[in-house]
Length: 348
Ligand code: SF4
Figure 1 (tube, rainbow, N blue to C red):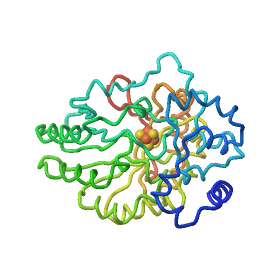
Figure 2: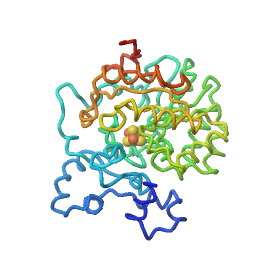
Figure 3: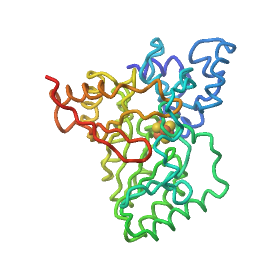
Figure 4: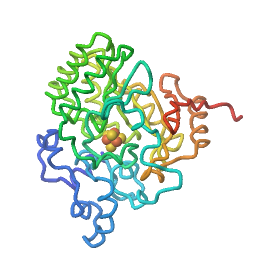
């Protein structure tokens, strides 16, 4: 219902065909100060106060995702995730651009090989919408490498020469933002390497641009199974009929869909919000996989939740909801020391 209301207010002249066309959604993304002023119903000089934020961290959101916001609520959980916020420029001591020190483990440009049996390929730094809580937000402004295809080839070369790698994770940015031909070329190249057994794609497209998950894309992805899609729903409001339909198409193509949420202040840091999110995911057959503690990333500090509050939420979830819904609550340790499980224990 919120989707319909916001859609009718903000995009009242858009046809249903255009609205459900992912190309229209991409072309009509909102990314300028003047559009932001219109959305927030403020004057241009007032919107100018957001200039520094937007110049530091890109702003771009699809009309679809924007339509999920209840504009009458300044603390709306979808709004917090996608509209610029002055607090992004208030850096806390100890936060950094790259707390996980991913760049340290880049063996070839944009390929991180940290764990022996798997590696992570950052195949793009482009996203359909830029999440304000992104832990790689410092990379958004990096220009596309001059020799982009050559970089991808270097990744393939490294993976084919490194026999202990059995799983490759495509990340970014959002890998589904690659041209479908480029993505298929990369997947095909991986699949041709005998020791690569599993491919994983991390993508927020089912959440911010679900109309992009179409039959054409699913038919292509299906050829490269076993392939897992890991997405990121953070709030029950994001589980719309469109998002459910996108996940269903992937599942029908034999692609398991799993979810990694981030614990975000004001978005999902309550038992009720998290319970409804997990129930909602279970209803659409998406398995909750991880719940990440928000990392000390510059520009993200205002989203961080005290770890003890996270444990309390997990404790209550364990006591009340089905084990099938439960994600693992983890903290990716700064310095690239791996994921530490945060196990709830009984307070009572
Ligand atoms: S889609 Fe992923 S990579 Fe892109 S901004 Fe959101 S969290 Fe970051």
